[in-house]
Amino acid sequence: MIILRGIAVSDSIGMGKAFLFSSKPPELRRVRIPEKNIQTEQERLEAILTSTGKELAELQAGIYKSLGPEFADFLEMQIQTLSDPALLETCKRNISEAYSAEYAFSKAVAEIAKPLLDAKDGLFKERLADIEDVTNRVLRNLLSLPSVSIIDAPSDSVVLAHNIPPSEVVLLDSRRVRGLATEIGGRTSHVAIIAKALEIPAVLGVEHLLEKINGEEQVVVDAQRGQVILAPTERRISTYRQEIRDYAARRKSFVDSAKQAAITLDERKIDISANIEFTSEIDAVQRYGAQGVGLFRTEYLFLTKRRFPTEEEQYAIYSEAAKKLKPHPIIIRTLDLGGDKILPGYEEANPFLGWRAVRFLFDHEDIFLDQLRAILRASAHGNVKIMFPMISDLSEIKRVKLLLKRAREQLTHKSQKFDSEMEMGIMVEVPSAALMADRMAKYVDFFSIGTNDLTQYTLAADRGNERISRLFNHYHPAVLQLIRRVIGAGHKAHIWVGVCGEMAAESLGVALLIGLGVDELSMTPCAIPVARKIIRNVKVEELRRIANRAVEYSTPVEVIRYLRRELSRKYHDLAVLFLGSKDICYP
Image (cartoon, rainbow, N blue to C red; front, side, top):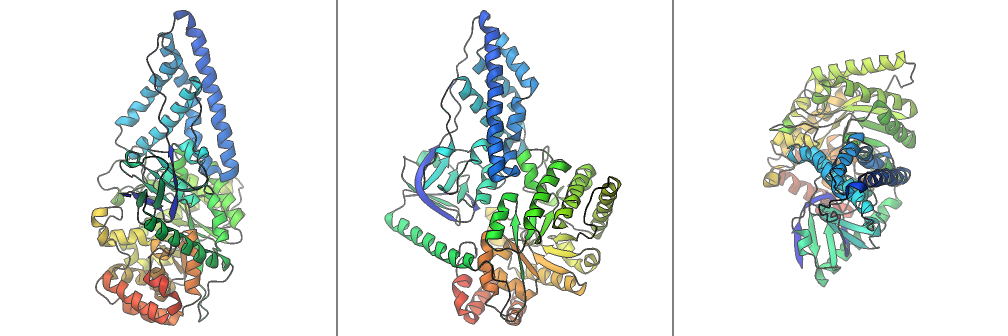
């Protein structure tokens, strides 16, 4: 048995036989051709580029129909690359030097890829996956080689690969693939984004993965713990099978109760919403019984396109989501780029404290206004609210309100419809915003507390840095005091307060946040049934007493210990949730 570690990007466990997926390019030799064959070779290459472009367009259309526009957009750059006249001209020039079409094409692509290889920017380097993918597809077609596809993965398999290119990752079938692991890839890669959306257990960045695998042995992808276990022992397999069965049984009982209202024993209603990235996730939102979407992240529209989406492209997606969710609300967060969601040409010593979210958008008002108009137009089709991230100063709220007013005026001038009463809120994720919440509350319709960044900034602990992961803890009393302060300020100003960070998807977090007085909890869809079960079996007054006592402790360890003891003692039927895993998707 071999245990390897990597980056967990979807919290679940999958087990099955290994399916090795290889996307290695065909081997090429520098082949010279007779001068008389140059024109024929040029025509052959042009025909293959055209047919490959059609092949990708058909694939994109199928993905658009089955999974939605955001997934289909992963192929846009490849299609554009093949239709670039400059690429064809370079290839023809190389062939005129008596090179074969295959070598001429690979040589031309190498020229395109060189700036990306030299770039320090992570996003440019991720674009190499698109270049490599389309190159391999063209070369295989030129050489008449059989295609290698992830669609061939058999039932109950775990896909293992060095990397999975964009045109393949969109073919993942969650009904057959039990998990996947790759040697490269991060939390914003194509694989991570889609695996999470499809709820496929995934662990990425597993070094030397393919060196350790022998063949079709059994593999466990433990995305709760960030582990890949090759050839597990019978005892380990038995343990994981029991975990999977227990989870499935609990999940079924929770999902069966999805239509039950999230009302506490003392009749306090708590709104439960979902955090999503893609319109295709709305099916899961409805299946798990969410009362709308509390956080629709829009930066993934940029990550899939590798460029800024136009107003029309954004409007199409936002309006589709609004229509599907109507009459339930959808809160659309404006682009939160920067930090760990990198930009073209973006390079800073400390990106989390730098040019991100509204700070970036203020310097690119054209991009900002495109998005504001798209969101406003979508509001004509459903219950849409808008939310601005990374607000740190009152002047920023005033500025976004002015831009929002300008966007409304532009739409009115064009006679385009929108909801003139659309609610506007901010994410409270910076300590300065939390400390100034009483003043900021006068200018907005709601607060949504982003506990991930609020914890990171309050404790000066990078949430993605494993060396200091012990310092990153939502239950630190300083963080809890800020959360209580924000909720109090919001209610004093008669606005509602929600939480959309990871804390809302933890069993202890649900109970604690309700005790602190939160009105809405927004979380990953799969966490909703368990959160609802907790809410329906607790009393707000009891949780308020527990929460007020918890905030008085000095360390997060003391807070967690106290919460587990008090909550499991008070609510025996929920003890397994409060004493077990903190992730309520997979308790």
